[in-house]
Amino acid sequence: MKQFKLEIISPNAIVFEKEIDLVILPGSEGDFGILKDHMPFLTSLRVGIVYIYLEKKIIETFLVTGGIVEVSQNRCSLLTEEVINTNSVSSKSKTEESSNKDEINLKRLKEKALEKLYYT
Image 1 (tube, rainbow, N blue to C red):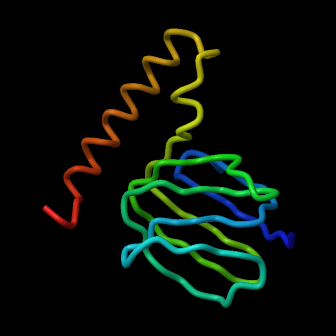
Image 2 (image 1 turned 60 degrees about the horizontal axis):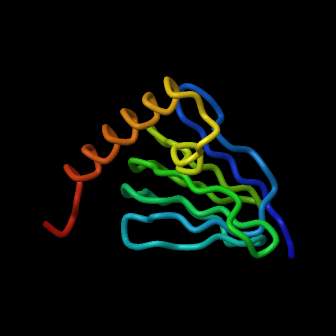
């Protein structure tokens, strides 16, 4: 499958940077997917899950609290204030301290997400 570069950037770090096949993003008007050679555009995101695919399998998922996505020349850049890797939260190989830290961050993000629900 054809690939393109995805970057997920928060104010603190580049969270994800890799060549992928497909990404599904939580757009403010609904979820949408990006493949290689997608037309250029700029749009906003709502609170939701980002699904990243490689070789027809989900390799990563992230919870974002909104943000901006730019697609141009086989490059997709997601800029967000807060992002957490949902795979790392459920990992049992983490130490108790970092697991508690992830749980606190996830709880804070969920509370923030509930404040921004569109259909309440």
